[in-house]
Image (cartoon, rainbow, N blue to C red; front, side, top):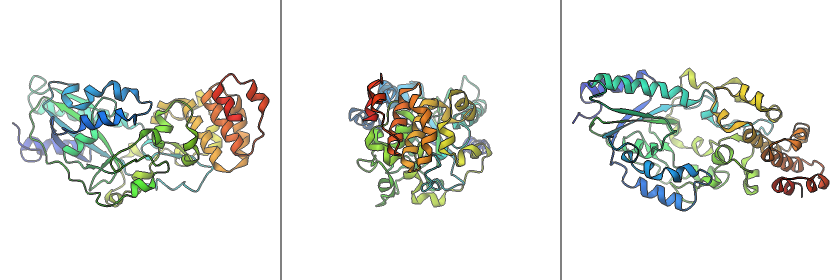
Length: 373
């Protein structure tokens, strides 16, 4: 068995290589270090808290334990990349003509940044331990059925806070998580101890009350889920609470007191794109598919597609209280996408636009027609 990370030469060199590649934290977890994770996941799924994310249920057996995904894995190397914002995530809360984008999506797609670094670190590890015959590795950045947060906690990177995301003593709530599964038998690091105490700021900050209890999230009520994962019309009960959030929501992360220890990310790859620091809703409502693809090339926002994104912008416009946005909404009343049309009708009426019952009577889509009446 290899010695604990940071004790022998391999551990010291691996940690140094991880830092050189841009990782802020690194630790090792045993493959059996999260015995409660699979059961908690099944309970969460049984309660329907995953909403439309059916892939969560489809991959539950592979996700529950590292061996469920790769039977040969012996150790998990958990890694964290700091993306602490240089700008206040809540700076646009009172600027209703501007759309708010989650911090993680302001720059380049983090998958495209972290994956090559992760492969480089895994390659270094293989070379340092005798080649592929001596060390098997698999790398994961968010897109595989891996319990990143539970494993990161077991590896000592931080603990899952009451908002269910990882909290680090040195980086607050701003860590991208990744993992290397390896056949090497590494001694695990000590798990992190929780330190939320009596604090409930993340719970009370949530605009849609998405936390039925501390350490438990109902994704169906979460603005990040509603604006990114959810493909259909956003339920009426959450529309006003969404405010001007057009892609994700950082409220529960931004208010965490542990963020005062988080240094802003200095990696140029995570620098906010100029067009996303203060995007005007009127401009976003005018995006067609080609323009959307051009503007958001290389951005994680591109993954949701034009229709979902413009749907979000229309909801934000309806919450703006700015009647001049009716001009930008008008063309969307005849948009080819029902989800865009429905959101536009809702926003149109909310801003005082004329109700057209004749249009509703001729509407093929019942959900859109219902928005008119």
